[in-house]
Length: 628
Image 1 (cartoon, rainbow, N blue to C red):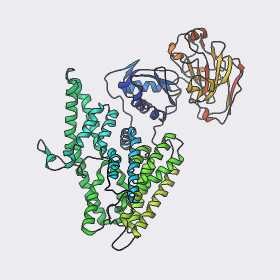
Image 2: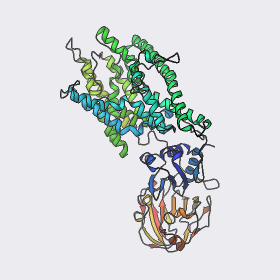
Image 3: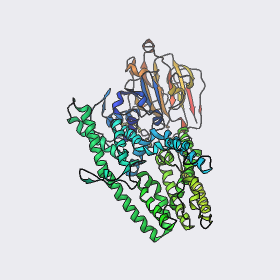
Image 4: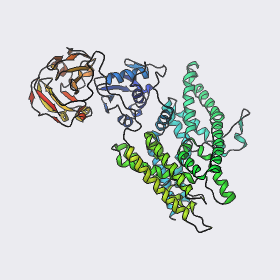
């Protein structure tokens, strides 16, 4: 049966390096505790930024994903989705229940996950291309100079060889050996394939239809689709290949079948779509130039993602050759600037350091017209900013056409594209002026709309709030202030002195730490036991007024597997303040080399305006924390 945590579970499994990287999995009261084959394969920063994950801790050979009080439910979902039983994952199994997701969301998730490992280099190469374009524009470099040629080769290399790089990252995403994904991408870029001609006219007598651009260079979607199919194919046939031959037979079948089907299926589909788009845009142009500008502007970024924008380029080239000017691609000029405005808004408004860093890296290249880092790194994963940028681009495209802007030359992109709209024969720069005006409109309008609507939560799956287990009292709909009593006698200290960084850093909430003088835990308030750890070392409960409390006995005591602990309550129990909940043997715990320091944390402390306490020696039942 599908769980509401299935989506979070899939994100966690993927970003700890996949099921094959998991040696074992256990959990305590707040954390999933993984033993991984190779921790370097884990995407720690991605997990830390995932809604539903508090933080990630790597210590003592364990990779700990901190979840919070509802970790048992997430643990169960991870085991179900990943087909993990007990301490170790199964080697084989299905994919588990699928989370319901709309087609656009699924597409965005796959594309962005494939681009995430490339974002730094993608931004760097985009910036380099922008700098070179600037140097050419101001006359510092000639586009024919050796220096320009060498540096441009570096800057353009990622974009040209994108199918190879994405073949690697997509293979990691879909569970295919990475080298197989790279080989499929390399095959699409082999010199005879990019040269075109009779050499690739057919295979086994079946016609091969290439994309409108003539090759797969700089394309993204074809290789992602190809690798997805390759992973699907390999998982289903490799079990029938004898072990003695798997080493070479499995990749032979996978890459050969996938490569051929990519050329025979993906190529023709792309060609048919390109032909169809050319026909549609021609008809739109005949009907209304303004409508053409809106359509080209609004759809341009999507067409670029699929490599279908090349269907419009020949139209513009033909127009300029036949009549000396073209309006076909004028509508797309605002797309670069709408991305600039969206990026600037996110950069200013976001409180996420990683998002700000991505924006800072993508902005210079976006200004220069290289928008891939902006799209794949920021706006598309957030979804709403990407949609806004498309709407703004459509408005600006219509405005450009309404103002009679016409392209007379092939020019650069972004701020280097203005000269394309100068009519040198008539000494008319009005087109360039209107292009500058509408590019400014695109920046400002996108900035305003994104700034108003943006949230750091955009594009994230929100983890549902923890529900009270069956048999427990219903959780309150709102929290009230209240007082918590000391659950154990001892010396109260600031939580910052806790030796565990999850607690001392207040990742789970604010609270205090008590150094116990007796091995008994009492209820700090009236409420419901939400979760008693299987290893008995920690208790999560909710007060009748909505305060969520975590009491964690000792540090790393989960490894004792319940030894030295005696439960006096169970999950789902309604308890009264001062009721005995748990007994623990302090001498035994210390004999195992473990501290008995006991954090008492209010896990929903953000719901309160203030929390008052005074470090001192307390007896169980004394006033401990007052919440306002």
